[in-house]
Structures are given as C-alpha cells and as structure tokens.
Image (cartoon, rainbow, N blue to C red; front, side):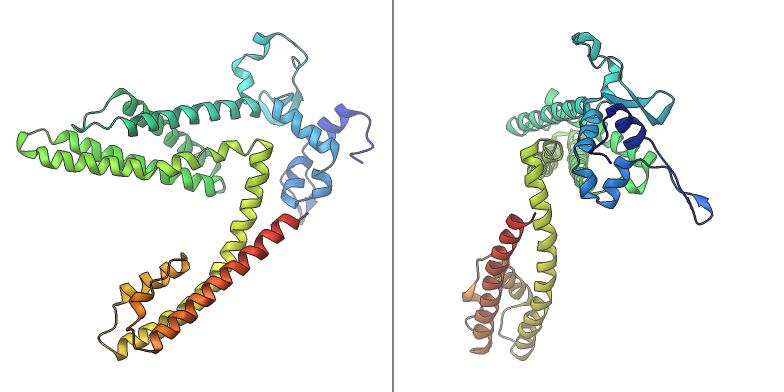
Length: 329
C-alpha cells in the first residue's frame, strides 16, 4: 500500500518510478511506471495518495531525475541537500521541470513585452527596428522548437496548445512575409504599395494580440489557483460543445424555414441577412427590424420564437452548467 509504506526511498524509486512490463497476448507490453499508468487510467485513489503526491513533488523539484545514458531509469539527485547556490545553478539542473517552467515563463514574458513594444512603436516607413527583429527571431526559435518536438515525438505531441501556438506563429510568419514584401517596394513610384503591405503586416501582427496573452495560460496552469480554474474552464468548454451541437440542430430547422419563406417571396432579405440575423440572436443582440416585413406575419413570429428558444435555452444551460461545475467533487 502506498499509504502504509515506511521506506520512502523504496516507495518512490522502486515502486512508483520503476518501469514494469507484463506478458500479454504472447508479447511483452510497453514498460510503464505507476506514475504514468495512474494518469492513463485516471486512478484518482492512487493519484490522491500522499506517497504519489510526494513523488510528483520530488520529480517537479528535480530531486529524482533521469539517469545519464538510461533515461527510462530514475535516480536520486545526490546534491539535493546542498545549501550552496552554485551547486544547484548548473546547466544539468535545467532538466528539472521547476526550472524549465521558470525559464518558459520568463521567455514568454519577454516575448510578450517585445510584442507590446512593437505594437506601440509602429514604423510607417516599413523599416524593421531592433524590437521587431528580436520578436521575429524568437518566433523562428519557437517554430524550430515545435518542429523538433513534433519530429521526435510524432503526432501524439500535437494537442490543443500546439495547435494554438502554431496558429499564432503562422500569423506572425504572415506578418513577417508581408513586411519583407513591403521592404522590397523601394522605388518612389511604389511608395503606396509599400505602405499598403506595411499596414497589412501590422494588421496581421495586431490580430495575434489576444493570442499572445492567452498563450500565458499555458504556463500559468502550474500555479494552484490558475490550474484549478483551468480545470473548471475545460469542463465548461467540453459541456458547451455538447450544448452547441444540440443548438445547431435547432438552427438548421429555423434556417430552413426562413429560406423557405425567402423562396416564396422575392422581396424578403437575402441569405446573408438571414444568417447575420440568426447569428446576432445567438450573441444576444437580435435584429427584429430585419424580419419585420419578412413574409409578414410568419417571418416575425418565427423570429420571435427563435429568439425565445435561444435566449431561454442559453440561460437555462448556463445555470445548469455553473451549478454542475461548482457542485462537482
């Protein structure tokens, strides 16, 4: 039992971190330790035990690290009791997750500061300044890092945050390419084209502003407060996908009804107006004026019914969702 084991070194090293494989279906399974298997199986009783949490804390602080030449084996860090700063300030200690996380947060803050400086010092001439050059160089470094990890790990490395970061880097790459195109327009006759490409480059750069700040959530989840909130948000987003999937079925029915009225009367609004009016209703900003003369009186009655279903359904869903998240164990 994890809770009753007194030999902590044996528990952490030989029980929880030691990799084991079993003979199944005529062949050995892939070696795995208790730490990995408990996460894969979502074994909450094992994950919530004091011994498991102590092992995670030791791994996080680097007190147990991978052995040189045999990364599948974990060994105890011999200098963990040393109070000398320079003993721990060593390049090999960068393998510790706590130091990796600190460096990632530091570089992300620098990245964010550079972006803020670039957006507040727009160059109308299209020339690159030092802050922009460093920003694009760091972007290239992040792209190479993502490509290297994807090459070594494979498709299993690609998840939500990788897709999020890849989207941000794509936007910055497009901004850089447009800036280079603007710089290539050097003739006096092409000054207008240079300004156009320069403005378009800054528009792409500004488009990534929210993503720069949202990117910080990737590293702030290591703090307890942010980590708990992210778990709640993840549950809410998962449930929201189910709700909007059901709402989409209702939207198809109302859209087909509005299109049928549009086919019967050539004076009604176009398809774009119908879609925009329905989208505004979902965003809690209905456009009743668009549907006042829409196949009167059927169009406005149907639009009232559509808004009633969307608004009452959304409010009821939010109440149930918040109650379920807050009362979930």
